[in-house]
Amino acid sequence: MQPITHPSTFIDSEWKDIIRDTAAEAELLGRLHPKQLALIYQQKWFKALMPVEYGGLNMTLPNLIKLQEALSWADGSFGWVFTLCCGAGWFSGFIDRDIAATEFLNAHTCLAGSGAQTGEALQTTDGYLINGTWNYASGAYHATHFTANCLIKNKDGVVLNDDGSPVIRPFFIDKKDVTLLTTWKYIGMIATGSHSFKIENVEVAQNRCFKIDPSAATISSNLYQYPFLQLAEATLAANLMGMAVHFIDLADVIINQRIVLKKYTQPQTLLLLDKIQNIKADIETVRNEFYSAVEDSWAAISTQSLRSVSITSRQLAKAARNHVDALYPYCGLQAASPDTEINRVWRDLHTASQHTLLVFEA
Image (cartoon, rainbow, N blue to C red; front, side):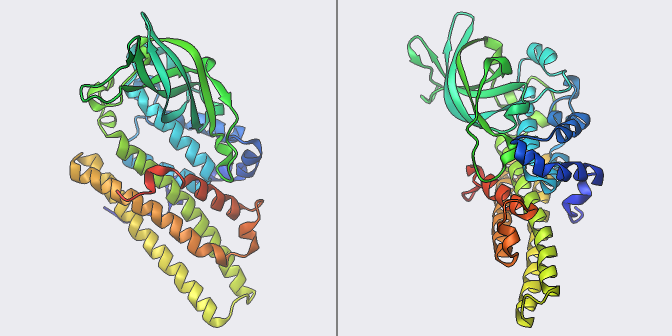
C-alpha cells in the first residue's frame, strides 16, 4: 500500500476549522458544541457503522480508521465522541430488525453506552427487568439510546453458559429509561461528557437483548463479521495517534519559535531538531504498519491478520504516548497552561490513553 499521509489529508479543511474553532467552547460546555453536532448530523458520522437500510454509511474499517484519526487530530474530544458513538452504532448490525427499522431512521440517532458488566437483567415472563449503573458513556448528552451489559439472572439465580461461566448480554435501552449521573470530572476529554448512567427497575422486551457475535448478526455485511475486539483496538489507537500528531504539529511550531528567539544554545537546537525529525520518522513507520495491518485484516479476516491489528494498535498507542511526552518539556509554560490548545491536546491524550484496552502488550 502507499505510505499513509498526514491525518489532515483525510478530512476537508472546512470540517477541521469548524471543529477546532469551537473546541475551547465545547470544553467549557462539557459537551460537543452545537456547530460540531450540526456537522456530525450533516455528515451522518454517528451512523458511520450502521447499514444503509437504517440510514447509515456502512463504512469500511480502513476508511473509518482514517476518518477517526483525522477527526481526533482536529480535536481529541470530538474524535472520541464520534468513535465511541459510531462504535456503539455498529451494534445495530446485531439488534433485532423490527426494533432497528423504527429506532434508527431518525437523523439524530446516536448510541452511547458502556462495555462494563455492572448491571443485572432478571428474566420475566415477557422480557427482562434491568437494574444497574454504568460509567464512562462518552457522548451521553447527545445519545438517543444507550447500550448496557448485564448479568442475566432468573428466579434460580445467575444463568450460566455451557462452560459454567455467567451469561452476560448487552441491552438496547431508550434514553427515556436512563438517568444520567454527572460524574465525568477528569483533566482531559472534558467535552466528551462521558458521564455515568443508571437504570432502575426498567422492564424491556426480549428483543431488546442482543448478542455481539458474527453468527448473531441481523444484517448481512462484512462489517458485522469483523471481530469486535480488533475493531475496538484499531479505532481507539487511531484516536490516540490523531491527538499525538496534533500535539507534535503544535510542538514543532513552538520549538521553532523558541529557536528563532534564541531560547536554546546551538547544541540544544541541533538536538531538538534531530529529535523532532526522528519522532516524525518513527510516527510515519508505526502509522504505515498499523494501516497496513488494518487493510490486510479487512481484506481477509484470519488469526494472523487480526493478531497483527492487535499488535500494531498497541505499538501506535505506545508511540503516541511516548513521543508526546518526549516533546512536552521543550514547549515551555504554554504547554502547561490549561487555556492553550497544546495543553488541551496534552490533557486529552493523557486522559484517553488511560483506557485499559491498549495499555498491556498483545
